[in-house]
View (cartoon, rainbow, N blue to C red):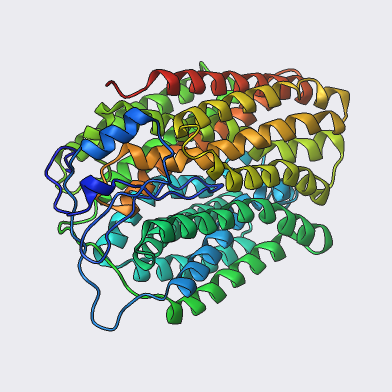
Length: 518
């Protein structure tokens, strides 16, 4: 396991201690890996308070020396950034496409209301289960190799999703899309870090990359909704699959291989137990709408506990674990992980199902809900890009707290809108929550960078993202259960909104409490 307190082998690390982080809609935290032989932890220009900056400067950490690139293999920065950003945008467009096509997809596949959680949760399940393993594979066997494999797999599985004839076949293709997206997200940042060796260059590159993430989230529903309205939801998936294959083809010429091998084998046993535990949790939450005290729900929750315990046991015995459990003893890492998980649970969970709910209750079309969703996601994108101006004035931890508070305030203004049949009453909530989401997206990467040793870019990004997708899976299942298991969709929507606001306030309080002791 990686230890936090060891002697730094880099001649610049103790003097510089800067961390690079992007503002991104998917909030993939980066750890800057290696500048041609040494790893320098980079920080976005003073985006921490004085105490944290002092700790970062004074602390010494061991860093692993990445394998030097072969002669003539100098990465081309601009093409690397373009290809990785494009692939990430396609992955996020594929992720968000079902948000507006869910009613049409469910009707075509004869999916019950309770089972619709699986149509939305397939991709985050694959992401959560394999993101950490994908990061390890990228570091060990080559980031370019894993990136191109993931991009090709995303294209093929997305196209197969267009041909699915049942709920379970479509869900399986979505899980495979999540696994492919995990390879893209984990290895893409490693490629960018390798191509941009200076802190200033990395800050610019991760900002551009993050903009494409947020752009993918915003454009995905618009593209899917537009194609679904004029042609078919199946055509939308076929187009996204073709786009992924085109990006993979471009990547074969634009990308240069890089790796940071550490020996050992990938933690496949950890990935298996972790993935099964997550499936058990989502299944329990999905079935809970028909009665939380039923025996199947209890058995699934018990299976989740047992499999989680098995995962912990595997991680403690594995030479190269998915995640260093020792990090859980550090309050800063707990704050980062809790921020990611509650972002998925409270924010993504609600807004993933809200477009489908509005189509069913207010009679909006897929394109109408896509434009409405763009108000929220577009503001999130814009705020995340501009949040870098807060560097040095507002710490990432306080940005995170403010983001959760704004989300809670925004969604509470939406209470009663569904029952009233008025989409205009949703607009203030979409604006305020969108600003809050942008702050969450901007601060989570920075907080995650501060919370981990600067040893591995891919594994560092994967740890924070994994907790986010765990929360997303649970949040979607919980939101659908709350909306559909109580007296009418309007009343259920109000309960789901209230729960989302409560979880956000709980997260804000938790992040404030989990401050590193000085």
